[in-house]
Image (cartoon, rainbow over all chains, first blue to last red; front, side, top):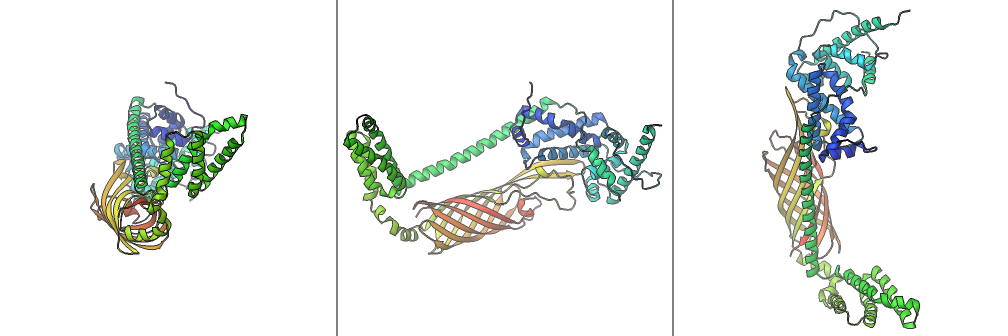
Length: 191
Length: 358
């Protein structure tokens, strides 16, 4: 079945159609948001097969719970869907990677409080670097940096200590800095 | 700590898109079909409720018209008169355009005049009607509707109740309306409140804000109100309350959002005091308590409330009222989260109809 995207068909109407069980609305929702929601998922889940599972679960959750969603303002549908995606990712990590979330801190042999800049790095490279972080570090960094959560909230969520959240973030940052230095060294145009 | 890198990362990854996996569309469609039947059910419930309210109002309206042919009867009479008049005078008017005669002109004038008067001042029905009736009898004397019109019109003026209506009403109300039945519905005035999980042990972290809140309580009630004297009344009845909340539970290995629905049946007891009363309006204060039992799991729920009420009397028989008020809900001692535990003070608005039975 060809699906038509109605120009000017706003979020609120899309929500209503989903709530009424409109199947073309689900295709439209997918066409609009799948890419960015997959982007959210990919920050948490490094493995492609796992990502597919989590992604699909999140979408099924969204479609089955859309009746409980109340549209408030523009963007609230995507914000809600993003939260569902993060939730599904964490659920997956908690069930299958629990030991990695709880892993003892790596001793990063370091060094200076390395500040770094990603202003000249593409999002794809940043994502690759995030995926190379240990699961626990990556999760804490994601929650802190992109979801704007506090260390206390992260600790509650992941079942770790607040201090551990802070130290994992710190070490994640150091590892990122190291990766960036290496990347920049390899990619600096030579004269 | 230098937060520059955080801002940079956020900016870089904002709107980042990743190749999206396909969805199991047959499963998606199954989920959507479930939504469809759910939303259809809700739609039918709403329709049923609307139909019930309409039937109630129509029934009550009809009954009160039959039994209390006073105020609302008059516009109806005027309308009947006006329409029949117009219908009958159409033919002569057309003729008049071609060959005006003095009598036709007179008729035309009378017709437009009667229409105007009938619309603006229903009180003046009697003289207007006479002029209309003249026209009718002159143009179509044997029409069936004519006697009917006359009969309906004549009734109010013959009725002694009608004649004494304005001066008698106040006394009438005070002396006779001792017992009043009420049907009402009530809801909170403010929008739904987001529940914040502050209980220890339950992290308030990744709550799905938009999907987790207590919806406004919705109440339907039936009650009887008994007037003790000029100012005081007591009131009691049955109260049905529906509470619905989305609860997000985050446990060690599971996150779930579920809808919690609670129904209560309650017994309110209120005392009200009339502050001011005129022919059509009444203003009063009311206060009391309600004991409610959950039909689901929660134990008894006690509450106290107070409200200011305004009443508009449509006919002798029934009135509309609105009561904005505030209620306080005591803790019910259970762990089931409800809007009452979250916000013990609730502003609410009740709207209802009163039937003056006796």
